[in-house]
Length: 291
Image 1: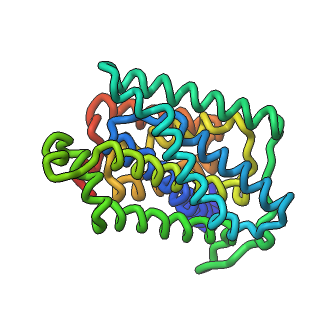
Image 2 (image 1 turned 30 degrees about the vertical axis):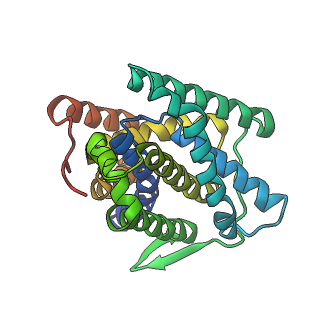
């Protein structure tokens, strides 16, 4: 029988991991909702930021958290360039959804192979400069996971504020809801999409900088993360930041606690079964219409 303290530790640790998952999924969800674009390369761009963090921390001596302020603006520009240089052309085609899906799938493969060529296939991590175990209410938690979860919460709240409380956010939502009417009010849909894709990529950049401090990364692992992102976004409802946060936390808890009661290889099976059930019986997710 699993001890209560062990289960409590697993739940708390899983919740922290789930908050990180929600950060990764939030940008993906906003892109899907606002641009009707399923960005298969989202996790690959996160890994690009992760390896950039390893590079600047290990070779340039930049402190781990300071790397956020160096790399996140760069990832925003990378997102803007990717949209303008690749994805903007797909909007001019009749089968936009299919073309953009193939384009981002190809981009994910390109990013993965560039990382493989430069860094190799082995797992790598970043030296955060601190670490250890923190005891909270009798539970022993990783200090790095706590710090990462705090940054993830701040980033997700910032996204919510930008989307729902700023002029650019209103422009994005207007273009999202009715492009033709938005254009009558002076909104440039293409500019709104550039900003939205840049913001989503910047969020992936934050997650990427945080990731190698809490888990080792390898170039091919981005496929595992994009599957987790799909699960979170579909169950939490596309475009719902609240749903993404809640379901992300739930997925993290499931991933951490189920191995206490069954072989860890079954965790992915359980998540796929849950996803299939939602696709069949509630395809719009649990939080449809929630902000």
